[in-house]
Length: 246
Ligand SMILES: [Zn+2]
Image (cartoon, rainbow, N blue to C red; front, top):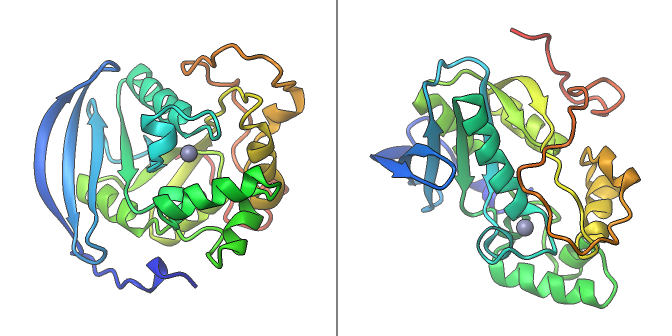
């Protein structure tokens, strides 16, 4: 299907290399670092508080240099990263896995920038990837599943709006007891992109209906939109349904 999917993952494909304290502006985390022998990527999980192994509040975040580091307003990644860390600290415990190799939904940084260039010419994010001869989404979530297993987590409450991520983690053996929406206020730069994600990639973004996105005021990364129900039969289009709370 994709280059990444062709990588073979054994249970011991990820080696835990380091476990260190990481104080941040959000709170004091542990940073657990892994070497992924299958792909060659270095991966890190930030762990906050005491993890019980069941229903841990978890964000599996795809790296996005432009959004996470440069605060690009063309996507919502940076704000989601911030909101997820705040939510985990507010919860008192949780995990954020920051997945390298996921830049531009897995096509790489330079290809993502080329795709942005095509979007300036009127293509949407899906059409741009395809125009470059690249997959719409090449992300591989198996490393996240292996990291969760290594930490001793069997089930999670997943901070995500993306049904495909839910399904991919589920197929990798991670039970998901709840999907926790991670909605950030859209802006005029990312509204078309978010609408494409909703319409073509099936992301669950109900808040777009109420957004004019005319405001140029900065978004509040602490603002999580009010909860919407977890995956339901009509929302997930036949994908695994969220089980009742465990
Ligand atoms: Zn991004």
